[in-house]
Length: 327
Ligand code: ZN
Image (cartoon, rainbow, N blue to C red; front, side, top):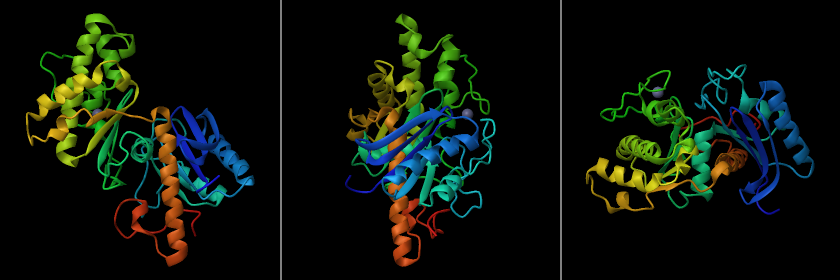
């Protein structure tokens, strides 16, 4: 196999996907299993990579994980899960556990940011340096890549909780446990199912037509704010709601209406500005490969120059080396 030999983990709330390879179409080995208790689940991932390492060393492992995650590199809790409703997982040191067991450089980011990186490298945002990836599934999540780097600051972005204007006459209270009628509270799959009494994919006829129209209006409202704050060259949308038939033409029309000609760029009106995700379920694992690649690159830089290069976490700041495995 040519090129680097990388490990990728997509750790989701319901399942883990682990693979070894260098690109989505160059996958050497892969395993999927349900997310259980932290210890046996992480042990299973470690065992997979240990077995893969028998055939040849791994350069690095990248993790695209469910959150919330502590991603401040200078923070003692870097790479750990923050308080999560998933039983037993709050505070678990996902990155540290993998790094300590495998003794390779490890990088971690959220599953959404991972998918954003994957779509940028091999998918629908390929060739774009500044873009936004949005997943509209049960909830809404978004990752913003600015100049090739994912935005992470005090926390990772939480685009699903943007505030959107309520459509006049829509009396659905909203499904977000924190804000009720935020973006995901009005337009996530859970909200849509609650508003119409059944999941979006089971709607038909006039109800489906109305549901799609409302979805397009709400999505356009949030996208407008994202466009005005991050100036993306492209917006990629994945997730279960994104595959509803006919959604994209409606969404593009509503977005044009919402932007109201300001700033009047023809690019915003083009069919290739808001596009469906291309990698499907491989976006997250592909993101893990991008993270692994960057971790390997940073480790090489550290070995050569003794200092971390700021590119790996995208902060542009002076950062300490990756949490573990690189020393
Ligand atoms: Zn919310």
